[in-house]
Image (tube, rainbow, N blue to C red):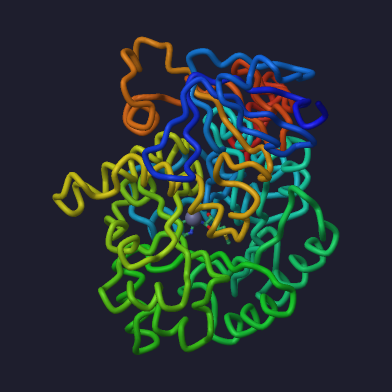
Length: 439
Ligand SMILES: CSC[C@H]1O[C@@H](n2cnc3c(O)ncnc32)[C@H](O)[C@@H]1O
Ligand SMILES: [Zn+2]
């Protein structure tokens, strides 16, 4: 029978669909056809199914691919360069000078490929990025086969990539035009932060986002200093300033949002702003603890991100999901805050919703694109296995991610990258170590 024929049949011990909290299918299979989830088969239906390839995941959890809602992929090449610093010291005295010296088209391409290798090996299938040299980022996404949101960075000051806000915008829109309609590559507008972007530029960004139907990605309320500085310069907190400028809408993905009062949480819910929570980066830069459970209670879409490898220093969404669950508990002194199923939903479906692709990916649902991962629980570290949802969040490590599919294409098979060459990634990274040390 034609609807019983699949390109791949993924037979899994457990499937966490994320359609409904707490639901785990046992010994079911996902049939993939033309890159989509064509069917979810019960144990009785599996034997009768016909597939070009059967992937036996006998001890594995099959679940939606992880959506990294905030990152700077190319910063893998600056990993470990400046640790144990507060945000502004880290940025102004270490990272921006290093970026000024080293960032180029090739830096972004090589750094992004390296990041994508690392992200696939930890179960990420979508990255929402913001950095420089957007074409290089988009090319890396295509080469790797990763679902890539390329943020066109916008700042008022010059960098290795642009001269001023108008220059960044012009370059970003020109690159975006070349990828219009691409299945894997989507461009967003990425004004860096309230303290690096003027009112005029924010107004332009809002108008351009409407004109070109683009999402906006921006660092907001990351530290108490940022909020205090905003009040000193503009007389109001940054979020109130952004609201006046029309920035707060369902188009906005606000990264960090650590320092929020009750009115600001309600405002985010009212405006439909989505938030990228970056627990490890916020801990390492001592930025603070974002009020994630309060945001979720208010109805705000909260996804999870790694931030860049120079502030995290891992691009490990599985670990980030664990941190998101733990940090919420210690931040509220409430063990019920961000339970495991919620943490998984944040790392998958809510991230996809924030990127307006929730109808396409983010859950194991018939008709959606097959962005899926398998995690092998037959390891000492996850034995015995009573509850796979618990293990995915609290016990499994990225070493247990065995397979990854994007759009039905297997990009990681038995922990081996299929679209990227591990030796080549390491050689590129090492060449940059030599170049950076020489400069
Ligand atoms: C214009 S986007 C790239 C820009 O952002 C810098 N960056 C990386 N991480 C953070 C962060 O947590 N807060 C603010 N800015 C950050 C990165 O180094 C690039 O210069
Ligand atoms: Zn960031």
